[in-house]
Image 1: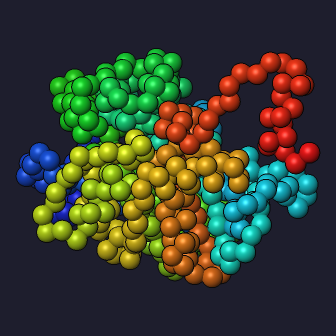
Image 2: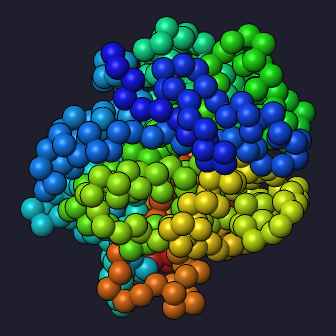
Image 3: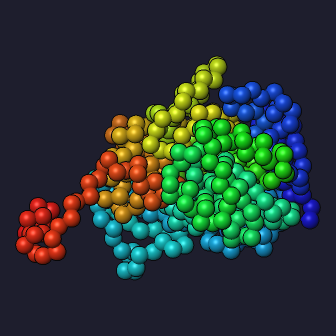
Length: 442
């Protein structure tokens, strides 16, 4: 099969063939220093002019969609793809969601199994709001998009063992996807990772390596394991295919919004790979002439783990220890810092910081107004949207998307301070009557 893509270093712009295992640009990697974001992250480049010629301009996206976007993916075919249903997650129309309720679709059904939209609520916001719910992926997180592509590439190239560092979601994702593919997975995690995510990893049969340290410590150890034993490494940004897997959400959004580009997308950010992936997806469509403008991508970070946003305009990168309830975006050294910064600079990206309390408040608001229960890292994007809304920064008539990247069941302990489980009561009506009247107008 002819090679249909190549890699390009985002720093020195050297090119590398796409038919071999490659991680960072070796020239730039040799200059990297501990404690700093790595140079040499690779971008995947396709023959856009040849792809343009596959169909007339007005029909090109439909053709790509029918072909599972294979011309824009670094795999040969769908036979290597996991049999699990990955992607095509629901896009819920949630404009005027505050204080609202879920309404049926116009035909009386609740659509959404293959990307349909369910309207939510009513209030007086004058912009459109959508929630992209990637907790509906097989292992309940956005990370399945990247794991699926990495696993498929490994399968096409005869690789049976994969390794990853993770705070939980990427690890449970790779473990689950590998289980579906008959591949072996080794997951290196900080020992403090949420129990639900560690449970997932073990249930899928992966080899779990908890370390006494941070995500960054786990990352470095996984790279050493990969180099010594030849295991294929799935680490975000380190493996360029993770960006390619995550970009598929952009194709879906364009399709679900009836071939319209949203004005603004709120994205939870840790390493910056989801941000870079969303940007890459729309950039591919821009290079193909399918769209004429890019959406504004808003990077949302927790105040206690803001090493990417805080260093965007700094001459010298300074990493501060991360402390936030949003474990999935808790990162000291963002591995995709330079590519994310380049994306934000070129396409006028924006950023906002949110506190842990704002995340918890958004979690309650989202859950109770929509029935969507997302983990703190995912809800950070929603908290960012609410902050924009409160400051009047969302223009009237604009289309806005919030990426919900993981299920709330991934980390139940994080929200315990926001709720109170009632004490047990006697199972008779007299015992519960006062309680019922307290909560309902009777």
